[in-house]
Image 1 (tube, helix red, strand yellow):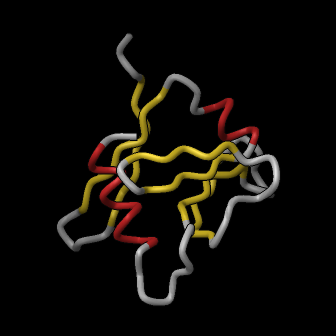
Image 2 (cartoon, one colour):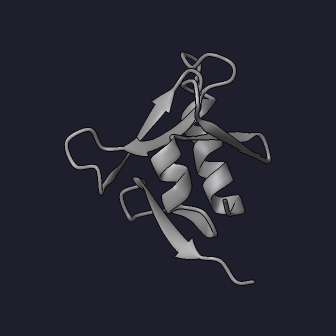
Image 3 (cartoon, one colour):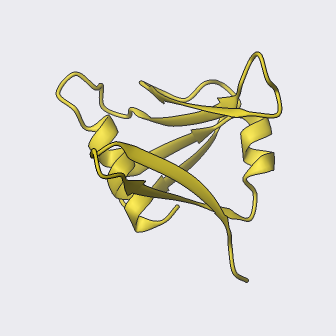
Length: 92
């Protein structure tokens, strides 16, 4: 994940009502297995891959981990302040 993504995830998960260890979970959408959903979760689900960067936690289910292998998660805020996550190919 990029530093921008780590900053965005920390901002989302370090809220007063968020438990310690909360993270952004990326998982297969139950209705559309070829799509991924993003949710703030208090902890990973059994079998999730856990990625930590600069204090940000990212939880990936098996399908998301396979789909995002060799890719980088990035984030930007739009003009309204809403966070938009994007995935980019990594350079080797």
